[in-house]
Image (cartoon, rainbow, N blue to C red):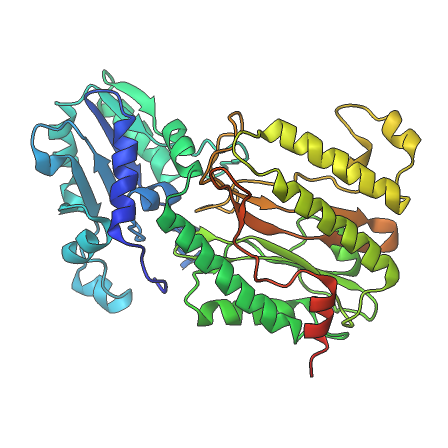
Length: 431
């Protein structure tokens, strides 16, 4: 790993919170992600399962975490199983974590090699009544490939059919939605690295450059500062491409007079930043571009003011819709009859602003979070309104990341990243 690992105190706290929610005589198991094949002997880069990372800080494949807070012997209450390094692995892949290194990262005292798992698990299952198993239950999840967790679930239910099985994910959905101070620090680091990338490209963007060249500037700056890489596939969208919400081709040339929408974030210690800025390719916004940009910025700022404890997901988005409708009316993109005759499930503003305003942010870009409960201090949200006008080949989105605070306005983790028109133009035209 390139990054500096957070303190083990974070992972100790996370495990303590999780174990507190377990039913009596319960054991919980977490597996690392697979390494996925491309073809022949090629594989995708390894990305750790965020749940095992959240609970242990271990960022290595073929790892298993076992939690059994009421195990008879204290040494069996937290066990981390790791793949043991041998000479072949050391030569071809480099060394894996030693037991001492894993203890230092995770704060777990009992570290075993992976080949000891089956016998340990057999002994501990005789003490357990309930087994908590883990599946990805994120509301946007799409599982097309059987995961290591899913294979394990099939195996354990086959060999131990009389235990009671429960779900870990609802507990993690709640816990991961409220960030510890150490997690906010990691998110701030990801945002700070993202700021460095943005300031770098401000001096690079001009008519004639290619979207992929801009993408290269971003990743160069990210890796220089120990980021894992991009938090998600970067969107570098010039001109009409900005009206494609998930445009990731990044293969067009930026032209005079166009806008450039960039939705990019760094990943640091597996924590994600999520930034969007929209620049004038030639360094100066046209009058039309300015008007729309100011409208989007106004919606973002007003939306952020509503990220306070006690507000809720549905009311928040309804009010953002009303604010956006007012701006679209002022711009002449909607008229009063459009709003008066709109269908409740398909409001008129959706013609120009068709995506949500916010999502949880953390170890995942679209992080775990409960949407049915009021906002709480420690939740982290994006705020990312946009206006997209395909007939004008024009799309503007602006996005920052906010932490909800107790009894006050949210903290903007991206407050130092330029967003005002004059500042962006000054920095782009600085010689």
